[in-house]
Length: 157
Image (cartoon, rainbow, N blue to C red; front, side, top):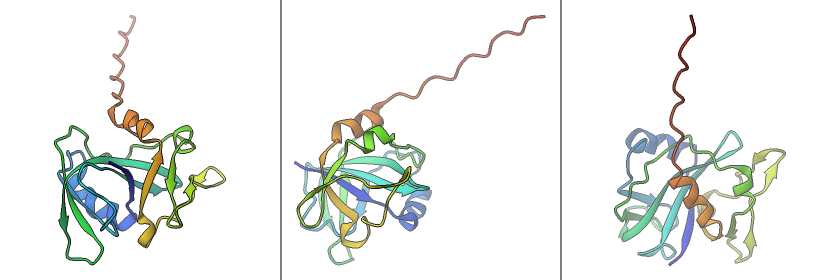
């Protein structure tokens, strides 16, 4: 079983946001995932927006299906309670821990342009990358409970 990063560009995020935001994801398509992603794998759907890495959702693959586009696949997700969140930012300390395989087979890390995450390396055939380090850290972000809103203090007369 492998862990994968599936990079969603601006158009893909916009298209999926309407139907997935705030919902548990039951299936997704993965461009160029054919021959890579298998049943039992985990796919972390991410995007880069405004120089920030967004962790949109996680899909544990229960079934791989064909897709009309060549080299693309659709995957059905195993039951989960992870909802799609288009505002979930990955902290820089976590980004610096992540490692993934480049198309040449070498292990790479995310690059920064100042404080911003570079995104040029994750397009086309490179939009799906095997994650070799950091899945535990991404899972921790997905299962982290948001703090409850603070109760307002009673006003003194």
